[in-house]
Length: 257
Image 1: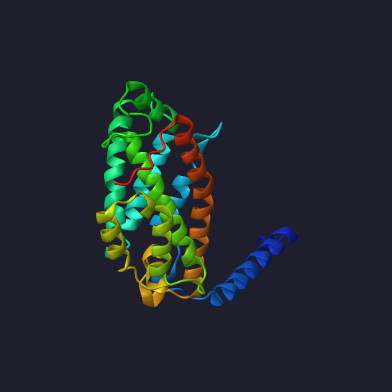
Image 2 (image 1 turned 60 degrees about the vertical axis):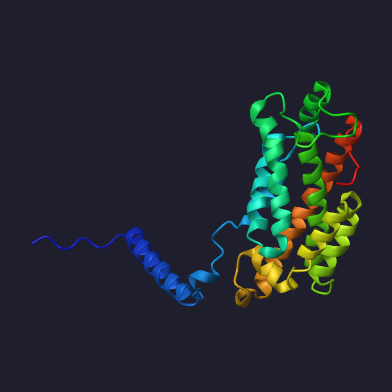
């Protein structure tokens, strides 16, 4: 009879290590807090998509990439369309102006690769009379999209602080600053009426964060605020460059509509 071969030191230490790892992991797993699926932050929200898309609009050489800008604006349209009736008019206005730009961009994507070249196409064609822009046109669409984003940037900035204005008041202040100077009597009546429906800060944040109002805890609120800060900081240089392009081309139309 052959005697059992004694277990090697290496094999013994391996088994001992394996047992210790299993024991330690079991102890560790027992202390992991169980989260319900509604609390897991595993998905990308519409706001995430907007921040990500706008971050790639300014290309090398301080060029505004039109394909990326239109993609970002479409993502943003989806966000504000989910924001309820208060932003319904803002969403419709953005959608209408996007369509004006997309007509030219789809027709000449290579020639209209950047904002500067898109504006040059229409300027050199004689479509516009100096800074009196024809409507509909890509230039007039881009002009009003920029003004709309400037309005929203100031509005979103007011949501970051819980001690700030009521969003309804902040919206009116932003409207007076960014849109009212270019609106005629009819729009200066219609827009404020629409903005008066803007809800309280918590409701607004829950819509932007795509959570139910009862699930808007401190952690979720902080995440939405952080994303809004990122969006605003991305918009600031973009909107400034955007306006510069219009002024360089002599196409900044300041008429009331």
